Length: 287
Image (cartoon, rainbow, N blue to C red; front, side, top):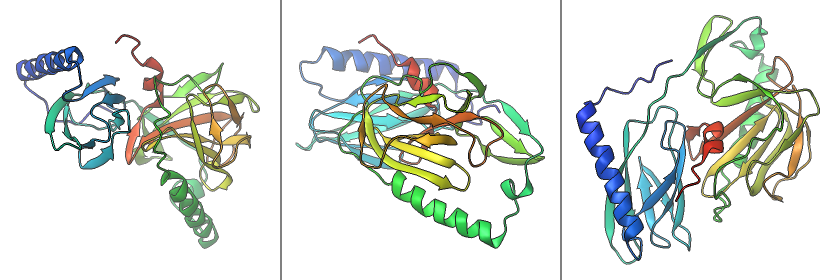
């Protein structure tokens, strides 16, 4: 599916991108970050880690966050983010500024899955609806987690050592001929029992093995609203509130819930924005 953002004049976009790079260089050369400096993956579904004055208020697209005591803040860009987004900063001293970040658009594929039971597409019994509502309530609690510590530092590792990617982030799915919302995960196939590892440091905000759609799922809060998800697991090896380090085993691949075979559906959200976890494995290493 092609990005639906309105086309932007190429010359104007180029000028804005040059101005943005010049602003970043000026910030980097400053002895004390007078504005805000961001580094990461500036694409739809990507994210950046920014540095500004400690405890500053940062707002983007109506989402307000607070920089930590070191002035760090994480910001994510939705699957359908616009070509540019404004970041507004207000420091504790009352200084305010705004910068505009260019966001690279993407194209998304369309995939079709036929043969699913009707109960997994559109029709639910009252008993199933009761279970779905109960699952949603438990998920809401997990997604509400807001670790103040920014555990996320420099990108993700893949949660599996060996796998086959079967569906990319953002694919538009057609289930039994019915067009559904975009698939916000990266599907990676592996045999049942394959170890799943934490891609970065964080705190377990949910570990539930009885969800209607997801089956068994773990959520990891990486700080400031950045939460990664692991669906359809066979076994779960962690508990809510547990701190995990990059590379620590959190469970094993399975096929529980809404699944057509053994795989891990790997997802990522920042607040209410859907991000591509695979993009964060390509975190820039240069300063």
